Length: 313
Image (cartoon, rainbow, N blue to C red; front, side, top):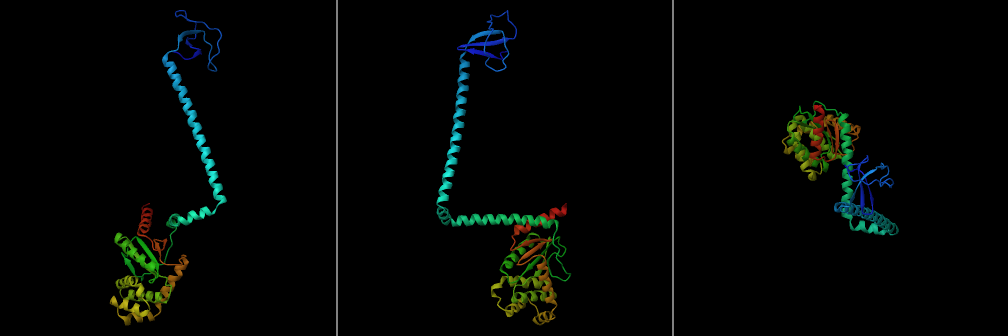
């Protein structure tokens, strides 16, 4: 098998043996310059003319090398041109900063959308970190035995809501809670705690707790109507009318409110909210995991799934 060869002009000397061959016609060459470094000197060669396929292979090899060289040169040229163009643009913008402001002015909506998207992503990342942290160390709100509960009293998921009956975001959250209860009819229970922002909000909270003392179901009905009619509530008279619409006795409710016990409940709720760093409404504690604002149904579902996975483990 041919392993090495030496060429001069149109003649190829082919090594066929490391020993002197007597059976074949050979040409003994005592001195030659090897093509490859480390080429072992061999004294038995067979002479033959270049074949067509040798020339063909050599031509293909040469063309391939040339193509690779040209391609490499082209890439380097493009990189240099790109770098040069980039530097040129940077210099133009540096010398003419008004160009940037003009572009921003013409694309305000796109810029605003990009900024908002980035802000949403950041909030989502921070929220996920908080959820995972509180999943390990949940908050523990006090739940008294006499607090009205919406849903299955023995449900595994407890949602404590710190809310204001006249807060518009709380009204949005109330609709989400309704959808959540439809999604998990036996799995979720709701406990309402108060953080009223003004006098009318405080009066509504007092009526809610007073009605709950008589009939918890009517108290939740009252809450739904208040959220639905927020814009119509101007004073205590408006609140009393809503209370009467759910079928309660006005005199009995008034007597309960006058005992002042309900004020203590609301003050206790406000102190607990401050303890948990709650400054605005609504805020939810889902098995102790804090969610702020008019939380989406998807986020509630996500948190409940995490809680269930932790429980299974």
